[in-house]
Length: 258
Image (cartoon, rainbow, N blue to C red; front, side, top):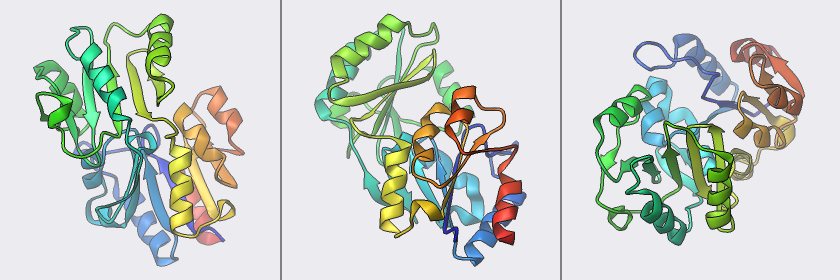
């Protein structure tokens, strides 16, 4: 019996002009809740930037944020894996003053910048991210669970290899495109975060449905008996899932009819 539905946010759940989830999805989540089926969203973003998009249901959602670095439910952190503090200091000391890079540090719930840049801030706000400003990593309270490194000129393979060589033994280094690189805790992934959620709520992989569209979602497929890749996702993502779906709504409707 299905007890947990997990969907990646990016490239799956559409938001309206107010950056809110549509009523069709909200209604489905309500119907899932009535059948005691939990709904989780997995995202690369920090909690403060996504919690309000679900409006009246925001406290009913399980949030796997920062690519698995933190899990939050009913506004409480139920799991987190911080980045090694020496890695944080190494990344910010080396790249923080380089004009080619913009760094965003994500804590348990919020995001911060080390320096102000109006163009960069507007770009973040389009995605609902409203960062705070600090002078250095030492001023950030709490743990850092993700560092996003932006480079509009793009990262080369040599750049990526360099970061792996310097910090890969103590952190997880990943990328979704040529302009963004992510640093998270050493064993952090959306899949590992999903495993934590399943353990905390005593839900098996056989009772879990996962929807994914990106490479970071593939690891979640390994923790679900019912893994769906979106039809418009990359071939490697589709090949990693058991099923292909055109949209989330149709499959959830089928789950509710079961």
